[in-house]
Amino acid sequence: MAKRNIIPIFIPHYGCPNDCVFCNQRKITGMSTDISNSDVEDTILEYLSYFKRKDNVEVAFYGGSFTAIPLEEQSEFLKVAHSYKEKGLVKYIRLSTRPDAIDDRILENLKKYGVDIIELGVQSLDPEVLILSNRGHNASCVYEAANLIKSYGFKLGLQQMVGLPGDTLEKSLYTAREFVKLKPYCVRIYPTLVIKETALCKNLEKGSYKALELEDSIKYVADIINIYYRHDINVIRVGLQPTDNINYGGDIVAGAFHPAYRQLVESYYFKNALINYFVDSNNIADEITLLAKGKNISNISGQGSEIKKEIINKLGIDKLNLRQKDLSDFEVEILSKKDEVIDVRNYYR
Image (cartoon, rainbow, N blue to C red; front, side, top):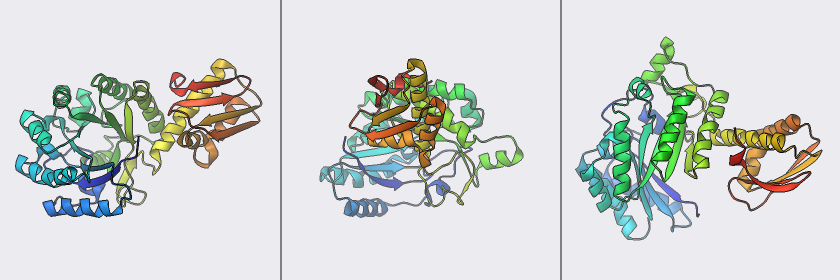
């Protein structure tokens, strides 16, 4: 699948009916709440001028709760994006919103303006976590909104957060399993970060909230993505995109942040699966060669070759060679005492 060129339109906190404990959209996006039709058009034109290829362009409305904005304003923003879709310069329109801001009238309007993908910021399906996070909705409306979105023919995206107040690994795994039942087109996973000027930051200072540490969260999230990978659900993002604010020395007070967070998670995932394979199969030689697609060779090597070194030490072998080969996302070809191609999803535990 050709990589999409994304045109991000940020509408931070605009239309959102309440403040979740973790949320400060202005800090996350570095944007104010003011946005106009001309801002939308200027952003589209700016990004189109950057893109060499214009055959796979997506306009994405991020932040806030798009469908909680007055319908007339939704229409004004969407008219601009839709006009470029009609010209053939934009292929997809995506937006993010709250589960309790979806109904037939809203979806009929989104259909009118050519929206393709609707992502719901669900975060958790555990009732206690929803209450402690001040989400302002219950779990049942998530199922209702998701099913209604799909009934209109939109592609459904679901967003999950881990490490929220009251959350546990088992609760997050439950949310992931329930997401699978909703059969989404895609999923995003975010570890909870404590941002300045949020209720969660105050709770951290009072000692009533403890943030997930980076290493713990990596194992936590690897267990969760394993559920999605086993059900062939596309995980399009793991961890927040670094920005001037969301970065070291920025507005993060605590939480599992790393600029290459997804690679850390997937390196752990591949390491776990490969070690389990070798232990289970006893297919261990003094020198082993692993072949995989390019991004997975990076994952197996890890930052500073740390994962590669861990595998060598754990298996007690002399040498581990890594080679790139055109294989599928989860295939690794193993050249050892016996040669075979495995699917790492079958060995992650």
